[in-house]
Amino acid sequence: MSIKLENVSYVYEKGTSTEYAALKNVDLEIEKGEFVAIIGHTGSGKSTLIQHFNGLEKCTEGTVYFDGKDISEKDFDLKQLRRRVGLVFQYPEHQLFEETVISDVCFGPSNQGLKKEECIKKAKAALELVGVSEELYEKSPFELSGGQKRRVAIAGVLAMEPDIIILDEPTAGLDPKGRDKILKCIKDLHDKKGIGVILVSHSMEDVANYAERIIVMNKGKVMYDDSPHKVFSHYKELEKMGLAAPQITYIMHILKEKGFNVDEDIINLEEAKESILKSIGR
Image (tube, rainbow, N blue to C red; front, top):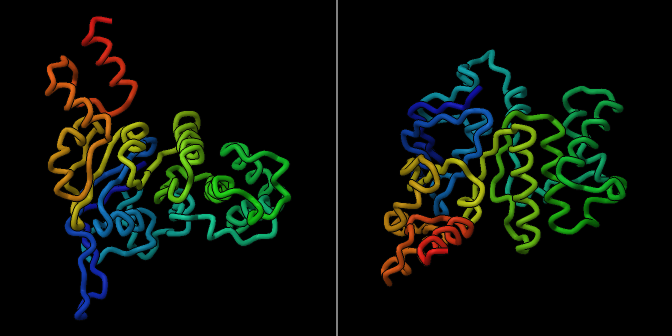
C-alpha cells in the first residue's frame, strides 16, 4: 500500500491575477509503515502537499495514486481514503467540539456508521494508545491542558484506524515537555502498531531524532528526498532555503575544525556522544 504522486502540480487562484503555483511537478511515493518527515520554510508547499495525500486538494496537473488507484477517478472512494490516511491539522485541538473527551473521539467511528458500543470501544482503544487516562474520558476537552487536547485530537483520527497518519506541526505551541511526550507517543504508534507516519515539522532536532526519511520542499518542488544523515549533509544548501541542520551538526563541524577526530555529519546527541568519546579514546 502506498501514496504515489506523479508530476503533480497545484495552482491557487488559477487564471486570476493572484495565481500562485504551490506545487510544481512533484514526484514521490510513500509506503505504508514509513516514518517520513516533510520540512521546508513557510510557503514551500508542505501543507498543500499533504492535503493531496488524502484527496482534500485535487491536483491541477498530474496524478495521485493510493494503492495503485487514481484517486481522481469517479468511482474512487474518497471517504475510504480519508479513513485510511488520517490527517491531523496544526493546532488540532481547535477542532474539538463535543461535550466530553470520549464523545469527541467517538465522532469519527460514528460517521463510519458503527454502532455506539463499537464506537466507544474504538475510542477507548485510541485514547489508551495516546496515553489519555480513563479519568479524563468524561471531562470536557476544553478543560484539558494543551498537550492533553493534542492527544485527544490525535486519538480522534486513530479511532478510525488509519494505515497512515499525517501530522502537520503536531508540537506547535507546546512546551518542551509536552512536545517530547507527543513525539514519543507518535514514535510508539509507528514502532508498536506499524502505523505509517508523515510528520510536517519546523524542528530539525525532532526530524533528526524520529524520522527515517526526509522530504525537503522548496518553492513547491522536492529538493531532497533521502535519509536524515544524507539530507542534513547538505546543510549549506538548506541554509539557502531558510532551513538548517540540527544544532549538534554545527557543533560537530566546529570540533572537527579545531582538530578533534569526530564525524561532522552527526545529527543527534547520542551519535555525538559516541563520536566524541571515540575521538578521545574512551
